[in-house]
Length: 119
Image (cartoon, rainbow, N blue to C red):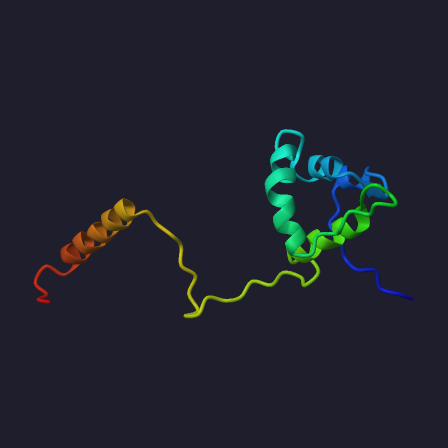
């Protein structure tokens, strides 16, 4: 029994033939609106990172290899595990204005609780 590698599953990719053109792959990945942009700008970058090559015999790229490439590219094959923050506390980003308002409220409430305490 062989273990099949994990791949990206996408209904549009699953409907493609075994070998598909760059435009067909682009439409399946980013949609019709952004396909020309992906083909022009992203494809050359992805090819340098190991995107499956064009097969002249079949006049297309192998779709199963495209799925495996994206599984590796997105980190799906390795699984997903959240690492704990370095100090053990989760930090939530709060806008500066909101953070300052909250800090001022905390100072006021601390002053109300202990009016005679000196810093």
